[in-house]
Image (tube, rainbow, N blue to C red; front, side, top):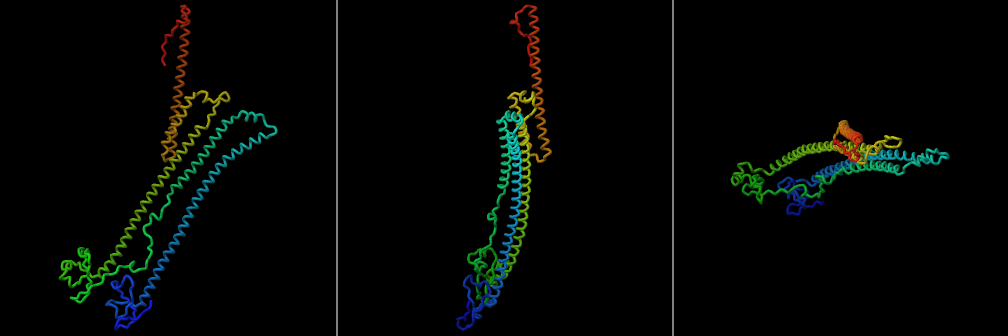
Length: 431
């Protein structure tokens, strides 16, 4: 900016001042003034203004740089925290993969050992006759069914584990930081309008030869469309009611009050916000704790269900090996198909009842109640068998009694010479 000589007549001074009062500062295109052009207010020399501006600008730039450095530090902290979380997730996935692969390898090792042993035995130059009989009598259909069941169970176990992992990953709700932001940094325009409002200039009271600098703070006066300053001395007679009730205050006094109230209001906002933030954090923390407890509760319930599923599978597919006469299964030769079906349905209903107990969180209590249900079911089945046995005994005794009665009747008829076809049983059966 080039400094010039004031062109007004009689001034002939260098324009090196600005007025320091807000009411004299324009929002745009302010110009330097000479000493004589200054109003009654205190002026500031351009060099002093420039010096102050450089100091304030340096402070402003330093503040921005501090925030920039803070943001870079935030990014580093976020990167470290995310890396730690990634490490935990990677370790968890690595352990899970190792566990699954180890389990599959164990099953494959058994299959491979059986395969190698079979190949070795069949390639033997002088195999035992028992080996030929073993493979000759081996039912490939039954063997393949057993392999298929094992294969399905292994696949189901792995699929369930992977599905649970996917569920846990889907359960992680990625927070949207843009959605929950409140305030952003403002992009500055570096204009006077952005930092203050221009003060309404004072008016001059010709009667008292002074500037009108008082403001009536009554709501009726403040709600008028054309606001004007008041002369305090004139208000004693022209604005009597409001003047007597102390509504007339000097602009500078109101400005100081406003400054104090702004600081007070800001402090109160910060205090209230801190209290509110504490309540928010407490609520979120409490909900997270409840969420964690519910999650743990669900995990225990799911684990109980898996235990029952495992027991049910064993009870279904682990075959009873109580043989009689060498290769006859006692349970199959003494039980009709209808009764076998009933046994399976009873077994299913028992586990359905046990499933209702899976929400019990205490493991010993859960196991005890499941055992009680199984014990009651076993007692019921035992009683049914006893009833069936007693009914069979009654039926056998009825048949024996019928045979004896017929024999006695025949003997009597021979003595009386009554033909056999006229013999009619007289006993009435009761079952």
